[in-house]
Image 1 (cartoon, rainbow, N blue to C red):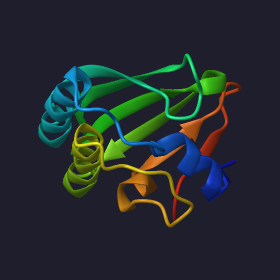
Image 2: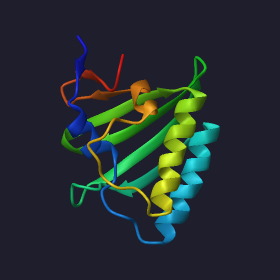
Image 3: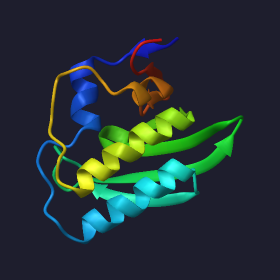
Image 4: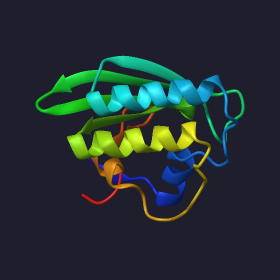
Amino acid sequence: MRHRLPSIVLTALLVASAPLPASEAGVADRAFAAQVAACVVASHQSPHPFVRDFTIEHAITGEADGRCGYTQSMPGGMRMECALTEAGRDGLASEFLEMAEGRMSGSTQAQKAWTSECEIVTADGKRLKIGAG
């Protein structure tokens, strides 16, 4: 059975809340954005915007069935799993570019379109649909 995660929870998990300083992190975010857009197998780490001492593990797992696999670790033993279309890859890549430029901010507004191509997998294995579907 699929459940929906409340949008405010997703926003807290998916969106950074404060501008990032210009640093090596920005260079790494830009490089990972290009890898996401091209669906190149790669990994990346970034600090969690709300959970101190938690490092998010991002991974591009490559193309399967015409979609690009992307996973992101989350606090509480959860993870986000995505099967991204080209438009979804471009949307996620844009978010990494925004982070690199320090332009991301937290919000309770509507989720980005690419998130509808993802699910949250809870620690006990339940799958929670993100976005409309």
